[in-house]
Length: 357
Length: 166
Image 1 (tube, chains in turn green, cyan):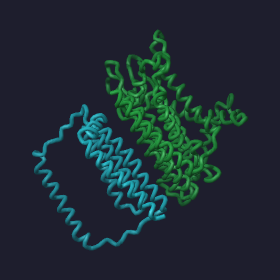
Image 2 (cartoon, helix red, strand yellow; image 1 turned 120 degrees about the horizontal axis):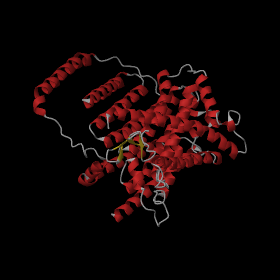
Image 3 (cartoon, helix red, strand yellow; image 1 turned 30 degrees about the vertical axis):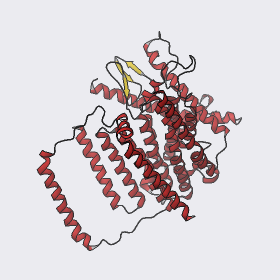
Image 4 (cartoon, helix red, strand yellow; image 1 turned 180 degrees about the vertical axis):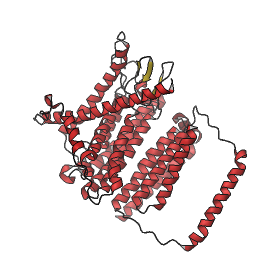
């Protein structure tokens, strides 16, 4: 492909993904407020636009127009850098996520993924350490939280940041180990490769060939660790209002606070995408063979979005249902239950894989 | 060509981070400079085609280990450190020593650069995850396992030392 067209296509893909992602983040906040309200027998936002649908827009304008305060005695460089780091790292991880197979527009075929390319012979390939890049971005993202708390020069922020970084470091282990079972079955680190490995004929003729079925325990560990990584209920101790005001972002206001907020919701979406790719067969779903080409390339994206939506719904559902863990319970759950479970899963899976080979 | 330019950029960032690590007075700034050094090293590995090693460098060194450093510095709430007055001997002997050493290395590099030759990398599978796994778990299985036992002993030692305090 011509280098100019390649650059143009890449820029379009990046802008499109960022636009959809930010809209998704905005409407996830609305969905969360609406659903939690219904769970608690309230209405939620209804005033701005029909059914409150323009509420995220109003929130966005409010964030931009608010005074951007920097408290005295903060560590200025790190204070400003921390939210940018958190947001940048959550944007980097979305770059390796494949949303579907490929799309052909005006004679140019491209993969539905920012870091994926389509070869002239029709085959698709993507970056072959995609999963590791997401893990790396997550582990660098911890700095955003840790530095925000430390540079704010406030005890609530510092305690929140210490809790957050301790929790994220602890659960990163369980998260990483829970993925190994899937990697053993698919024998690739490329996210596209993992999804393609699940495109096999169904088990017993009716059960989809998704890795959630042989890797159920890994999925459980992944889900729990992912909730802890994104600091969501029941693991939202870093921002426990009753104890810490708001945790690591207590001293942040206006757009800097919004950046943390956006980073958190983007991480939720990334984690949901990853769960879909690794355990739920990615974009695979029923696609009619006689449909027009554009439908054939966009329907998989729809199935992908449906599965991601399911996980987002689950996030909010659990938020409306479960109470918060105590700190020692959190640590014991991560180290004494999830980690051994993930290791046992790896041992059993690798024995089965070795026995089959 | 692009590779050379990127190598020079990341090499400079790496060296600048390392110098900044020594110059900064506050431990957190030093730790963050070290993160910068690790990250730019990872990018240099990536330029060499070792994508797996690059990713692991970010996850393990820049991510896990340095986060623990920052965590401990935050927990101890360590403030800016005072510089001790530099010793005269270091100034008198060190600076000329560094200059002489630098000249020597430069001279040797310039005079033998034609005989050194280049490193040839087979780009198709060098640094590939499969290739590294094959090397680690087949050709170098014994050293790999011995290293893991060594790390296990270190962990147990840390636990024992941590317990004795209480």
